[in-house]
Length: 257
DNA sequence: ATGGTTGTTGGACAA
Image 1 (cartoon, rainbow, N blue to C red):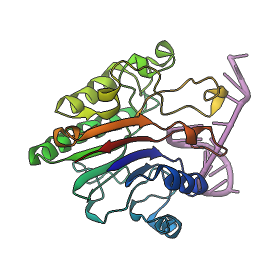
Image 2: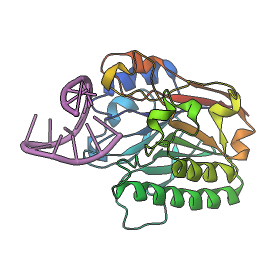
Image 3: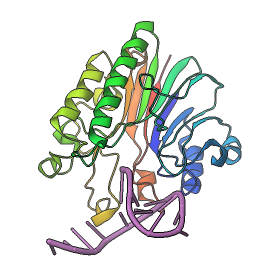
């Protein structure tokens, strides 16, 4: 089963790119972030024509996550547990083809001296608690998304320049590591232990893509039962180089068995 | 030092 994650930066503005990528990469499951629309505005017909079922956790203008799946989608959860007052559409979870998946759009957190940074850290605490609960079930699951965390300096084109940014700060990285150390496997890092520069995001500004100055902030985190089935994982750089591209590019993995 | 980009939306705000 091929599972991919992609921050599309508006599913409506990106629809031609999304459709051509679905047709060529042909993931069984696609986890989308920053769809920037409510469910009523989601292009479900066009994507359905390619054979995908759709579950949307939408929001007007900002955020928004979705699950696209060739197998039927069951048991959908539309919010990360732990804060009933949080109305930002950043988490959707479901079971597809016997595997639990989640599409995660973790808060960016900048600027770090604003309420956005403690919101990010609090969100990561809630993710920690929920991952702990999921691991207790001892089943295969894949948590894919834009984590807005570059785990190590080698995941950043200029670590010194980014050291104080909410995506790279030591406290951000420590909380991300705490989640992973509960027992998850970073699929890309597991299969490419010595790779550097496997970026998944390049800013639109200053020719960052043309200079290959990016960050690795989109991840597929696997439960032990999913990691046991992990066969392949890679970054698909092709969509980032196209016209009207998202500033992120897809990451995908293949589970056997 | 400033501006450099894209999307939503029709002025900032988010990234």
